[in-house]
Length: 398
Ligand SMILES: Nc1ncnc2c1ncn2[C@@H]1O[C@H](COP(=O)(O)OP(=O)(O)O)[C@@H](O)[C@H]1O
Ligand SMILES: [Mg+2]
Image (tube, rainbow, N blue to C red; front, side, top):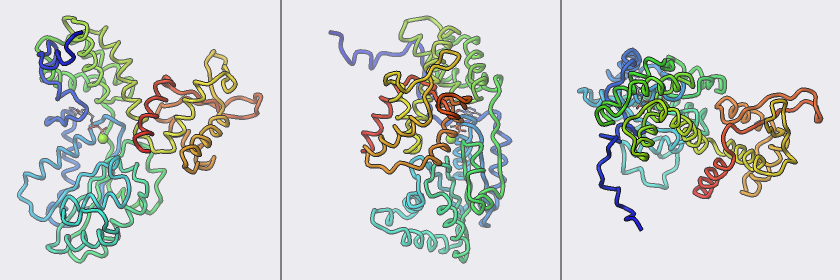
């Protein structure tokens, strides 16, 4: 038997620094985003001077550099000689409720009160009196703000705080990947959040090629990556959605393929192969982080897709689709078996539209068929794999 850890300390022939290729790496240098960084800085300037600034809402598709730019600006602020301004970066995928967000603020600045067991009112009052002590301005950067469950309450609380606070204040910096998020908000939250708004446009193919090139220079060994491979990764990601994360994922996957197969250089063939996997990886990540009931719906679709043909219908192109009604029934039974209350069919239709928009499913309205007017739905990815991924996360949460 080969030594299981044999490869662990072997030097890579392909990579010089894997870390800079990881999705968690925040680059210091964000090309093509000077304008956006300047603009965020401009909006934050009043807060840094100790006046409550206007709230800002930053949005744009995934992988357009929003998180990186915000973190970049926060780093710069840390180096400024300002005493009264504080910025809390909050990833709402983790802190996904009003309570958790307030708790995170407390744990950033008042660790003594971060222990469990304090009620929301206590935490709120703590934060207010900490701000009032010397007229601080707190900027709360809420990344992926759209996943906060009780967002209207959170916004209301943070806004109300400003009328309770005698000196100082709170500014909200909301960030979202959901371009259509505006339409979902309560009008009051909307007018609060959108005092200023800023769009991050998708990168085009040339921009992506340069982003990849810079990263390849640090992440790969010299001469390991063909320019044609860089251009192709950029073109694929640009066509997909202008997502820099996808572009970087493709090139690093391609590097792994080269390493695993002992090839000499990363070329277009490896990029093509990697692109197939990279898109799937991202899809699975996306599915794992879906809100609970959407995840259960996707799970129900995966289960039905794997079941016998009773539920499936062939369309004119010979592809298998499911009836929306069958999926809803399955979803209800899945939810019940997990002791969760299923959402109404009205919510269900809204979730289906969301999943469609995110490319996780494909759906279309049937003409007048056997069951009258209905929606036909198909998963965009392999049902078996999706079922496994979701089961893993459901077990973890249970
Ligand atoms: N302008 C840029 N220059 C270099 N790398 C970038 C740039 N924009 C995005 N990236 C890379 O793409 C990845 C995704 O960016 P991110 O800021 O997370 O996007 P978003 O928050 O909009 O989804 C980051 O990890 C970063 O490595
Ligand atoms: Mg982000």
